[in-house]
Image (cartoon, rainbow, N blue to C red; front, side, top):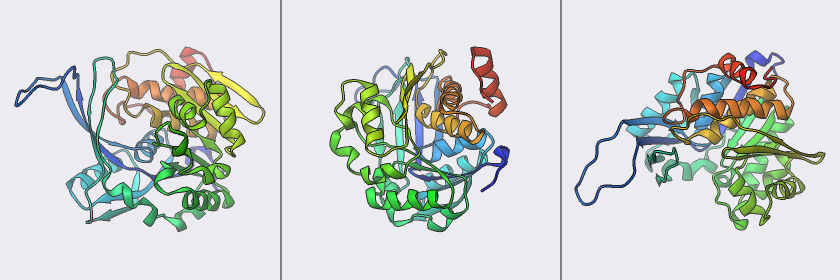
Length: 316
């Protein structure tokens, strides 16, 4: 493994999605009606792709592994990742099904429903980049439930055995049975990064702190749970800490969880303790939230570190 934090090598594995975003949308026109909007954009998204894209912006050397269709959507998704410096040579292209895609009508408050096609992501477990796990500093598994517990556990175990820091972020719904799709992988995850709804739903806890404790008891070394504008919760066997988020004018919440993951992991790569890494994660998410899509913002690591210093905190 490299010892230079400025040359950290990250591998993101898992879900890749092409998002089409429209804002602002207050209602869907009836029949054949139409409506004028301010902005339409297409961005690389998904728990692997968006995390990798933002990690690259923050100065990491990133390879992205997953499955996309052999179609125009896949070509565009790949080019958007490459534009922001991500190595896409491990993306497998298939002619069997279309690239995963979503259409997101963004409400004026930044929230949004979603129309989604699973597409090529259904083949992820058939295309694990096993050899790429042997020489990398960080492995982030985006949506381990798409691999199933046994494959996800093998993937993360191999990465960790070769010295990599492991992390995961799930798309699974907040239901107790959803956790069981990848529960076997929990003991091999250094940093599990769910949101509050997932934690509460998976564990049937009524309190976020208690839910995070239960996930640590299931094997995750550290649980870092985001909760929208509420403080981020960090739980380990030693205890629980809350890290406040930053107040900004929110345009779109798409990709905020993925950008938090990227900022947090970049902080860990710099040698920060989890609390300070979470500050960097929250600051990164704040940059993305101020525009449309997962790739919003011309920021870099120095920009985000400066943001943290100005708002209070130690980002270095």
